[in-house]
Image (tube, rainbow, N blue to C red; front, side, top):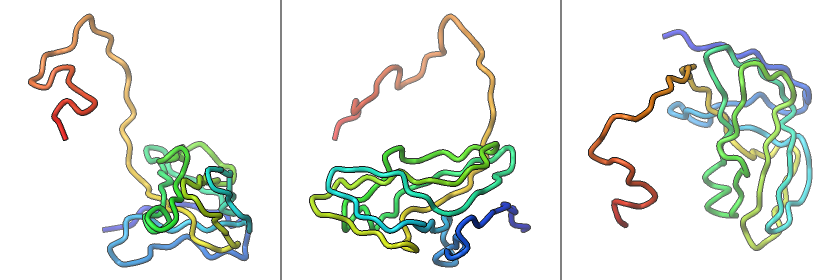
Length: 145
């Protein structure tokens, strides 16, 4: 199977290229291009030092790293962050510290992960009434705990 090619511009050439951590990984690690401290309950827009050209028909999803979330309460404000195929600026991650301790990030630390997904574009079909289903309008915990 031929792999999808994503064009990347290394704005900060001191950082490594995003890479898959293991053979079975579906996401590449994203690195911080900045050194900073994230105060408890604060958030910050952080540069990854790269620009990407995601092909049309695909999207990038920026997701939190599970280890940072589990150990430090670090997540992403707009998770998942969406990287559109026509965006050519620097890829930023909006980190948030849900924890109670200061979180120190050094340039080159892994701060998030990126998944590339094939997407389906759509048009709206306006209707007066939707079809009935067994579930109906049940939502927000309607099936219990």
